[in-house]
Amino acid sequence: MIQAWLWKLGLGRGRVHVFYDEAYRLPLSGIESSVGIEPRGTDFTTWYLLESGVVRAADVRHPVPVSYAQLARVHDARYLESLSDPETLARIYATDPSEVPVDALLDSVRLVCGGTLGAARLALARQGPVVNMAGGFHHARPDKGGGFCTVNDIAVAVADLRASGFDGSVAVLDLDAHPPDGTAACLAGQPKVWIGSVSGSDWGVLPPGVDETRVPDGCDDITYVQKVKDLLARMPHSDITFVIAGGDVLSGDRFGRVGITLQGARARDVAIAAALRGQASVWLPGGGYHAESWKLFAGTVLGLAGLGHQRITARYDPLSARFQRIAHMLDPEKSNTAGMTPDWEPFSLEDLEGPLRLGPEVQPRVLGHYTAQGIEYALFRYGMLSYVERLGYSRLRVQVNSTGGTGDRIMVLGHAGGREHLLSDSVLEKKVLQGETFLFANWLSLRHPRARFSDKRPQLPGQQVPGLGLSRETTELLLTMAQRLGLAGVAFRPMWFHLAVVARGRFHFSTPERQGRFEALMRDLSALSLVEATRAVAEGRVRLDGQPYAWEPDDMLCRLTPVPLDAEAVAQERERCRFTVEPAEAPSVKPEPL
Image 1 (cartoon, rainbow, N blue to C red):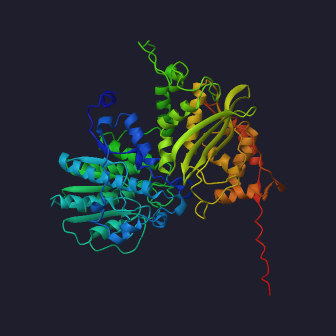
Image 2: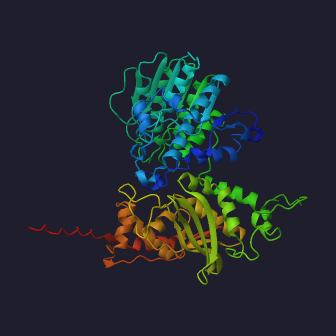
């Protein structure tokens, strides 16, 4: 109890300095669905650390982007010139060139590099640990990038320190699930440099002098942590250590095969923090392709703060918590939680429009409440507009009107390529379901018309253009709207199987029987990719107990106050149903004319 009280006061723990910027998020709208990377991971970790008080706002440093002169100390001129080609960046990030906003993406990469360099300088000045919330691009070589690594931030930082007169020894402790092939190539032959690694993959022969340990697939926590401790025992004392606390070592990671638990990763990082206590160290997250990778690096920072015992609540959702906090600040009815009457009443933008005549005399209001200006301001506050701008759209605006019967329409438009594009289109209404009033989305489309479909991002049924990568943010925004309007929650009717699959984390079907059939369908189609499964359903190739099955576009609900479905009824229907898939017909080949 005393320890927890001291922690709340910021006493009895280490002060952790971190480098972070909202622009660390890569402006690649399809990377979540096509590659499996959580693009918000850096934000999730930082938001949690700030909201839980582990990191103070005053301890967050904003990085300065590195210059091309600094990059040129490590990377070849021809390679750096090639980075202006979207084809080069698309290969590195396993995406289609149409999705690559070159300038915005390189701005993010150079900013992260600046964070690693800034962290190194501060670590040397403080003789302690400093965190960069992104970075660890260890697959970038002097003449090429790969594995989601464009430039090598560690090598760039070391080169800049050397150019500034630093002549001390450097250690790189790489605990990513993949070996440090790029870092080893960038630092090869340099004196006073040691590289050690514990990984779970073989990427070929590394340069001489790299202390590489490979653990077996699905390694248990005890074995893995012992291998790390053995490496620490062999590591020479260094004047600065770069630690890649790899987030891709978790069991179930899409690309890593190490297979340890969050507890094992926490034990690893606590042991390293103890070994490096009182020394300059830079901590980087490296890779992570698992839903809980952000928790691993948050645990890393907890260990550095002396809170290695602190657990992160399993059901904590950083995006939802972030939106709730912003909504609390914007909502005058929730700003005074202590029951005290302030001397002034906080207000929102739409509250000002009428009295000050900032808009026309009669303005359309979505659901009788939200004006176009109010919605645009909310999108700005939640960070959605800035992200869309980084995708290559400018002069964003919101337009609202009534459809006359199916609800109120909200459109977000933006300019690119010399014309205005529709980026988001939704139709909302209040609708009574099961005796409660919900915010019902009759239509919702998020559109990225500058991007195109490809083998890496195939077209799904119902899609006209690729999406913006903002579906989770949009869901949270609708939930905050429902909360402010005093509604039971948000509902929609998925017209395609994949929409229900994407929404299943927050939504469930309105009846246990329908939920049970959906879960059975997911179970029996689990051997297929989501693209293959949703196409099979849409093409009528799915059978239920031997009979043709047509997708059931029934209501899905997300209540603000959850009400569980009848679990027994869900299970009974799930076990009753058996789905099978007929193979797709081979495309007919027309004979060549003689």
